[in-house]
Length: 244
Length: 257
Image 1 (cartoon, one colour):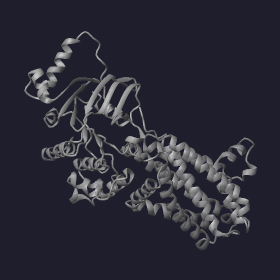
Image 2 (image 1 turned 90 degrees about the vertical axis):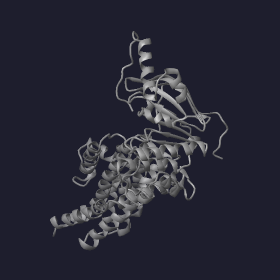
Image 3 (image 1 turned 180 degrees about the vertical axis):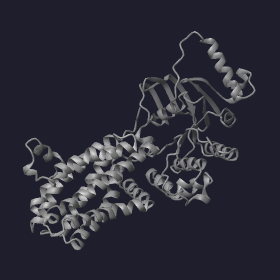
Image 4 (image 1 turned 60 degrees about the vertical axis):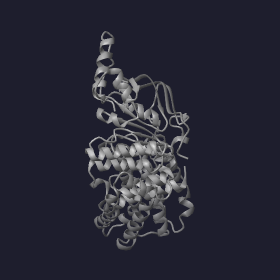
C-alpha cells in the first residue's frame, strides 16, 4: 500500500462521481426528503423524536451500500480492476481509496441530513448534534465497506442491487427501529446483536435521549469501527490478482 | 536504462492452463526475445489471450513456469515494468482521456510529462479533455493503450490493439510499436487474428488450439511453407498438421479469449 496511490484512487472515484451530478443530487437530497416526509407523517406526535435520529443512521448506510456495490462491480466488469491489479496498486489502496471517497461524500450527506432534521424538522436532540454526524458517517463507511464486500459476489448489476434487500433490509428490521431490541422474540435478539446496524441505531437513540452520551456510545462506535475494518478486510480478499 | 542486454524477455516452459472444463493451453513452451515486436497470431479461441494473461500474471495456471524479465510472472517487482492492454478497452468511460491517464500515471509512479507524451503517442491530443464515453471504439482502445504507455514499461503485452481501427491508424500504431521496440529497447508481444499484420512483426508465433505450431520470422515461415503470405502459410501449416494427426482426437474448441 502507498498513500500516494490510495489518495489518487480516492480522488479518481470522486472525480467520477462529479461527472454524474444526478447521482450526487440523489445522494444528498433523498435523505432530506425522506426525513421531511417522516416528520410530516408524525406531525404533532413524539414518534419523530424517537425514530428520526435512528433513520439518520440508516439512510447513509443504505445509500452508500448501493452506490459502492454498483461502482465496484463496474470496475470489475469494465476490466479496469484487472488492469489495476497488474500495477503496483495494492488491494488496500483500492479499498481505502473507495472508503475515503465515499466517506467524504458521507460527511456532506450527514451534515445536510442532520442539519435538515434538527433545524428544519425540529428533531429534539438531548446530546450534541455533531455526534449524530459522527455516527452517520460511521454508518456510511459501514455501508461502503459492505458494498465493496458484496460486489465480489455479484456478477451483474442486477445482482448487486438485489443484495440491498438481502443484506440491508434484515438489518433494518432487526435494528430496533420497528420493535425495541429488548422486546425482540428470543431467537431474533442474538441475531440483532451481531448485526452492525443495530449498534448504529442504539448510538443514535442514546444521543437523542442523553445529554452527555459520549461514554455510553463509545462501545457502539467501537463495534461499528470494528465491523468496517472486518468488512474491508474480507472485501480485499475478493480482489484476486489471479483469476481462472 | 531502457536498453537491456540481449536475452529473452519472456520464457514460458510447459505452461498448462485449464479454464472451466477446457484445457486452453495443454503444454506450451515459448520464448520472446528482448527488444523485438513479436506477433502472436492465430484464430480466436486459440489461447492467445490466455497466454497473455499468464504472462502478465493474472491467469491461474495449473503447472509450468512463466519467467518475465527474469522474474516469475506476476511478481510484485514486475508490476511497474510490464504494461498490459486487454482486448476490451479498460479505462474509465466517465473520465476524460487526461484524467484517466493522470490516474494511471499516479498508480504507476510515472514521471511528470508522461501523461502528455502518452496522449501524443496515441495521437489523441486533440481529444485529451473529452470524456472517454464520447469517443469512438478505436479512440477508446488507444486511450487504453496510452494508459499502459504512461508507466514507461519494459514489456508491453497488447491483446488485439488494432481491432476495429482504420488502415491509417493501424499503420501508425504499428509504427509506434516498432519505434518502442527498436529505438527504445522495449519488448512488445502483440496479438492479432489479422494475418496481414504479420509483416509488421520481427517474429511470429502462430498459436492454434493452445499449441504454438510456428515460431520464426516471416521470411523463414514463407520459405518453410512455400506460401506467398502469412495467411497462406498459416493455412498450409494447419493443413499439414491436420494431415499428420488426422486420427488423433482433436481438442475441444470453444470460445475463450
